[in-house]
Length: 158
Image 1 (tube, rainbow, N blue to C red):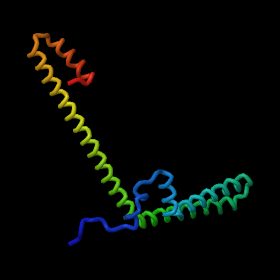
Image 2 (image 1 turned 30 degrees about the vertical axis):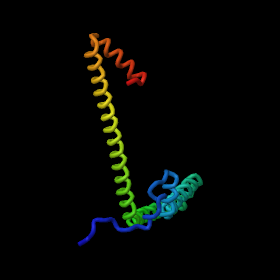
Image 3 (image 1 turned 60 degrees about the vertical axis):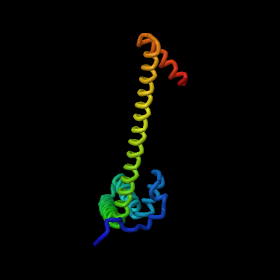
């Protein structure tokens, strides 16, 4: 019977793989798939060449450069598809890891919010109890008792 656990990856021990900024991600992706930027540069080179040949009025060179542009774009597309297939498992693992991290963050936020609500509830119960004691002990109006109790709460008295 097959296990549901993800297969081991070469990035398992690499904590930088899972916590990287945008520049680190860009350099990592350039190292992973160097043919894509190469194809983009070849496409730009062909377009610049075609632009120059149009200005010069050389139609034959213009057609050649536009064909080179098409070949460069095709090369880039093939490099993207091949790289996507090659790195698919690691990208899926990264998405899974990011989902787990996001879930942990949501759980921490939820727990923190629950603790805050519990603390507010305890403060309210203590405030009401203090108010009841004050109202029973002395014959004061409710507003005077509330004002004195809030004053004590703000000052930190018990």
